[in-house]
Amino acid sequence: MNNSRTKNAVRNIFSGFFNRIIMMVFLFIIRTVIIKTLGSEYLGINSLFTSILQVLNLAELGFSSAIVYSMYKPIAEKDNKTICTLMNLYKKIYTIIGIVILTVGICIMPFLKYLIKGSYPADINLYVVFALYLINTSFTYFLFAYKSAILVANQRSDITNNVLTFTSLIQYILQIIVLFTTRNYYMFMIANIITTALNNIIVAIIAKKQYPEISCQGEVNEEIKKDIKKRTSGLMINKICQTTRNSLDSIFISAFLGLNMVAIYNNYYTIMSAVVNVFGIMINAIIAGVGNSIVTESKEKNYNDMNKFNFMYMWLVGLSTICLLCLYQPFMKVWMGDSMLLPFGMVILFCIYFYALKMGDIRAVYSDAKGLWWENRYRAIAESIANVVLNFVLGKIWGIYGIIIATLISLVIINYIYGSQILFKYYFTQVSVKDFFKRHIEYIITTVAIAVITYYICNKILLNGILEIIVKLCICLIIPNIFYYLIYSKTKIFKESKEFVKDNIINKKESKNEDFISK
Image 1 (cartoon, rainbow, N blue to C red):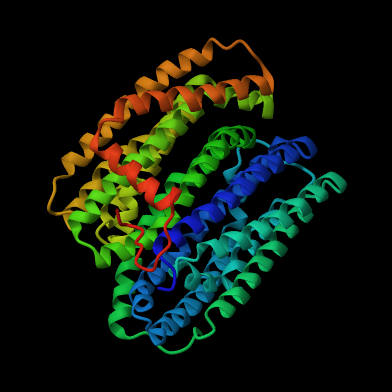
Image 2: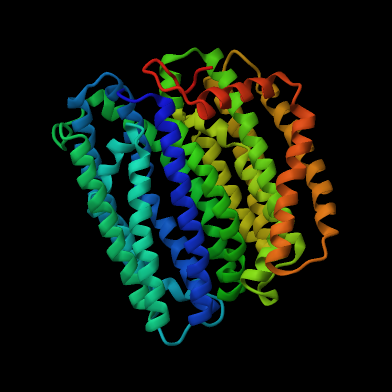
């Protein structure tokens, strides 16, 4: 590789972080503008149709991850011929996927009204709006989406991040202008379609310029094709699992409680998702480097690295969980007003949801980098079935509380516990998974104790509005970090992590022999 893994990872993190900040800020602005100009039912439709299209995206089956994984070795060996054949296969697959999504989407259109309890806006055609969402999703697969694979596999996600930032800014500005000047939801969606096409075209041009030697030609040999099929089978099941967890909640809430509750729920979910996406930047930035390390380094070194990364990551996850606990309601009051608040019990559930979702991330990075998608198939199937059944049963009994509790049960018991056992069974065979669980139990107890203390202090602050948010944010950033430091500063894992941050981020030595998973 021409660039060190450290340089690529840091570049990817910063570009991704900037992208997420822009997306996060404008997402809040867009949701606010929709509420003010059109009403909460439109926001509910936006959330519902987005969730439905995420379900339809199951047709992608994880081919993108499988193809990128298959590129790691030929890129390291500079085998351009194999890379070209993989890109050609990717192009063909994406064309088929686009056709499948378009066809299935058209077939489910007659059933849309059954997914909405109560009324929906009378001044729009539900089917035309859904058709626009469908066009936007399927269009992506027809128009050069496969081109991004060569950039991602070469650890140049910063390029795709920067292009997405640019086109997203155009999209959001156009949509805000449309909402304020015309209040036309059809035009709102057309702006989305235009910028999606623009994003794909720009990425395709840059990929061609960066890697002119790579083109879509040739046929993948049977050995690679067989490996891709196997990994895709596992990825497909894993993707179904993620979709049932992330998208079906909104669909069940719409069917049980109506569009207004979907809008309120998704306001809270949007905040959590924004934080999740920031963490996703770190995960996306390091996964290619971890994949390279798994190929070139020993299991013992990778296990030590995983524990070190997990410690740093869970520190940040714990800090973010505490911030959500203390700032959720004050922020919602300023953003949407008292009329769109959920009870504090729901805030606690969202915080648990966030922590449970993130505590398996580093483990998942190593599992994905190792390509253990097929080995995870039964875990993913079990989680998907459990999530759907529990969503239906507990949603009927406890409403919105039941839907989140259902997700938590499947997430913790099946995704985290079972998923961790799979990684240690098929890769980290030299150590016991019990040590990994023990570390996480320690992190959970520490975070809960610090969260109680911090929330108690924040509750003594008798302020309102923006000032309340600022003061409580300062408390949430200072108090937990002090406690985390006092608890861990003398430990070996803290010292190793401190050394890593110092060498690879603060000093950031950039030599050809520098390695992202080193030190």
